[in-house]
Length: 363
Ligand code: PEP
Ligand code: MN
Image (cartoon, rainbow, N blue to C red; front, side):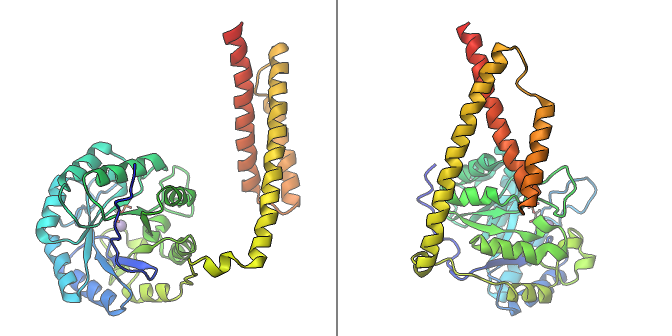
């Protein structure tokens, strides 16, 4: 889809564009105090709070609901800041618009469901406030793009994306693995869409927040959404990942914001020289892959003629072992070499399968 009608929605060109506030609005007082302290720092651009909370398991705190919208709006008025919350259906949208909420976002558990996204999109017809779409819980770029398209198709021109990481069955250091390549690909495909990183839901704990936030800034993301609570340990949801306004202020103050302006840097002769060498190396990498794949085809033919299976597990194990040992001894990251080999092997198998299949169609 053509996102060329997208307008700037944040009106704010200094990074990070910062959205902060508690995971959930709990009480009127909690909202007042947290938001006042956040606003005092002068670093927060938008106040956030969850009103309806999508919880993984039943019987957890599911948000105060509609009543808390007035607390959020009031905090915005008191501190002269726009306010944002999550919507998952048409009733949420209607209640938010009625309460004068300035920015809405679609949560990760909603983005996965095209029916829900379409329902939200339909309820946004004729509405001109910014809408931010979080990535779906699963690492599916097309699903994320599809949700952005549905909202855009409804006529929303102030559109942004939020990267909050992807859930995984395996235990990792993150609550939701960042898979940075996915938001990078989104940005490369649709440069007009601003991306906000949500380190809170990626990290899932306080200790990783700063590293994730720094990485997002180094990847040229527009902003950050970080959960903050006056008393994080006592929070009714996501207690482990929330920080108090003072710590947030410190975290933001400690970020190194590097220039995204490439102009003078792009033309420096040192960089040009490095890039020239990289171009040549990449060229020879491609040539090497071409030669390797040409051999895969020959091997496919040999296996076909001799009636042996494409996959030879022992040989594959040996390839992995020797190449990884070699890579390691040369200082390459093990995981990187493994992933690269897996990609090459997958393509090699695909080529050999083609050879086998052709013989079936022809013969
Ligand atoms: C949230 O922002 O509080 C939230 C529920 O996030 P996500 O949709 O990313 O899980
Ligand atoms: Mn949360």
